[in-house]
View 1 (tube, rainbow, N blue to C red):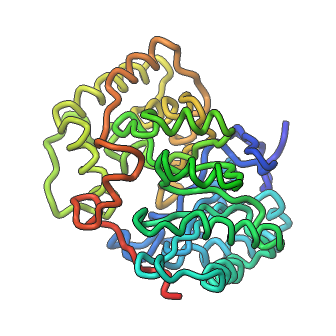
View 2 (tube, rainbow, N blue to C red):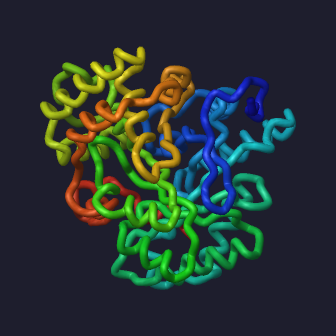
Length: 352
């Protein structure tokens, strides 16, 4: 059996993407650690990362616009190097050019952001850069993807991927000659937008999906079963975001019906609602990994139980019968700047 970069045996399955990058099927998310996400920051974020690593989660997700997170992971990597445990750590960061910079973007702009990520993380090459684009009316995303490819050839990037591109734009990038190893998208039983057309495209081009929002910011859990519908103010930005998804899914009463189903299925596996919701997404075609957006390692053992069982075809079908979500393709609703989803986005955080 393979071992983690730490001292314990690996408990989390791994998977290889096209291009050869190996990642864990559970990924430690970073958005929840960013400044401004929650009122109270994590007490020991670097120690929490080590707990994930020791549990077999050696893949960490972040972004240039997650304020302070690349630096935190860089500190974590530095500490693990001293212990001789850093060799298998994989960091999946993002390149998210500012909304106001899209029209005038240059290769120099792109390279400055990539160089800054390299410096923050303290690495010679970025394991993965997940490319994002705010406004499809500015038709420069293919050109920018090719600049990232040039930086890959130069050795600054190992793997190029995408984040939140819909089917049409993903197809444009692929057909331009860029080989995307993966796409990071929101995907859950509450949000099945990837299934409308993106999954088929990804299967055709061997592009894997890395999925966030699989437990809807914690709403897919026992905590919210048989509870009254929450109202603002919410605890953090995740709850604001995913309450909108619940509304598009069909509302609070329909969510309660789904939670009851997930609870019943989970009893068979001694698994939580969160476990079943995560296992469901892991079972879907083209899905490589799910991103756990835990701010701390407090519920790490419980969260990882989702990899210890497999849902039956009948159970998957019963959950899929509930699947629904916002209208349109992946991230289309969030891309409307003055819409309810778009209003919670932060469009200009790179400041290059």
